[in-house]
Amino acid sequence: MKKITLVMFFITSFSAFSFSQNLVTNPGFEADAATFTVVESTTNVLYRVDAITATLTQAANPTATVITVPAGMWVKKAANSGYIKGVLTTSDFHSGTSSMNLKINSNTTQTGLNSWYNCVNLQKLTTGLTHTKKYIASVWAKVDATANNQCTQMVLFVTDNTLKLNFTKTITLTGGTTWTQYQTTFDMPTWISTNPTADFSTAFFGLGIATTYDSSVPTVKTLYSGILLDDFSLIEDTSTKLKTANRNTQISVENGLITINGIENNQPINIFDISGKKVFSANSGANLISVPLHKGVYIVNANNSNTKIAVN
Image (tube, rainbow, N blue to C red; front, side):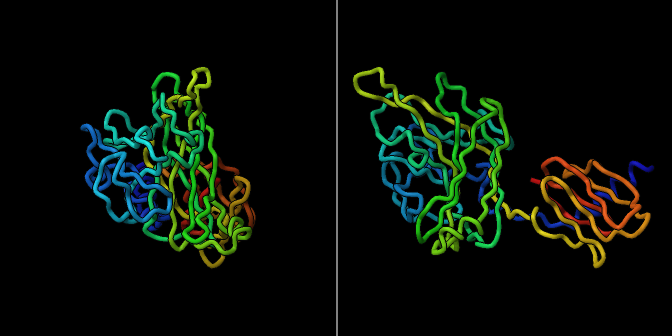
């Protein structure tokens, strides 16, 4: 009976929380492919744009009718070549039924493919980014199994629509060919402080890869680079905010340490991870208590109130 009571308690408590909204549309490529890909040689390929902030798609590579790029639709930004593909695949995915294979094919003399911004999977966000907030970007990714794959890093980015500058984070693919979640934080206030005229009221978000060239042949040609992508997210980072669980209790996070202040004497304190597992439990013996926790999202129950906290 105790176990059932605990589960029901957590569900009741958990339902009171509203997690940060994912700003990415179709994050797992599960929407109808016809809404964001075209059929080219029986393969679903992303529409191509010639710039990250482009308003129109291109008519070639893949062959497609030019359309105005709507917010929330995945596109690929590529050098003017058919050798870069964003291909929807249903044979390998992290969740759902599909993922995106972003790849640079081998044996092309196309220049610039050693720069991530010439091979990008991106979308214009349906809502802008607030200059005073931080945002956590996350994606599940793996290097695809193609032989001699040169993809060892990826770049996550957000772009504004005035200066059209990329705020970038380079991430090493430590998981190799295993599905791995990669995460980074975009500190907008710090970035804006050095780019004060940028305007993210219209913003773009995405991921890019690069390749290397085979210099052993007379005409230098690209080597293969490819990655599988699934389950993107871009959410507001609330981990540095002071949380008020009730009028007497304050909760804050710094350097992996959750600090709970203003606790009534001899009151239970319980902390649950996002799956509902209890990771800490104690009765308060003082006004303040600090708990070290690994990176993740937690629910803190103290003084009969619940607070969502993210530890980075």
